[in-house]
Length: 364
Image (tube, rainbow, N blue to C red; front, side, top):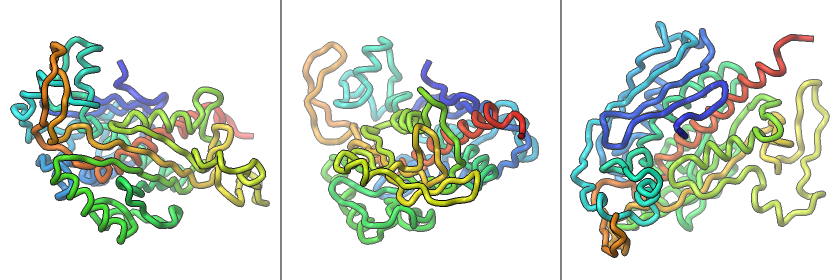
């Protein structure tokens, strides 16, 4: 019920934040795909807590165990099961939150929907659930690299009021990983880090924007009418915790342009390929990828769980005051970067298989 994503390449995530562990089952991955298991762990290392002094201090190695689906590092075509055991649970930190709903968190809505909820840490609403997405995304990235040499790069472009100044098409993974906030603009990154620390010391939190570029996406991905590529990307990215906005290409700024200014003129190119002079479409036209770079932006709200005292109600509906304890990110964005590029990879890999099945069953 809402824990599975994808059509031909499907992931099902499981586990709670302070339970025994979290993980994923990847179904539909083609057989005979060579998988570098170290790359899966490397992606999880980018997401894990405790990696810097601007993230949650929870200490988890997030060591992945691959339980099925591979033989000597090669996919069998059967379900790939992966699990990460929780090692540093502290359910006691959440005793107050068991009787007081955290403002803007999922406590109240989970209780209203199910009549029961995990006793600590947000359960399935915790960002710890995304471990399964990142592990599955690491497999999708390796599939995409083999099919079309596709590369996906995401980075932090804004924290609160601080914006990076850079050319998105020139961002490299090395530049993204060069600092703890994952912003390739060094000057802006230093300001962002200091700002996150300051707000965290005040017991508060902040949000921002993550941008993502897809280099060398295959042409023809996307299924009209309801499974347009940008529609599936929007669903994937808006399913991540704390997301509040999605843009592709010119996004909301397109309203400031006339059609003659916004249209992307086609350039002369070889048969079977497309090229445009501009990329206001963000690499997708009519819901189908045109081969140009896919450019996305995703807005993340401030972390809901903060140490500042807030007015709220308890499970009986009575007013109370909550100053949350526990270990939480003052800003989710540095750790959300691999979550974003993983979800993009899963969508693209799924559509690659769908395109193969529908349009390449036979050759002319």
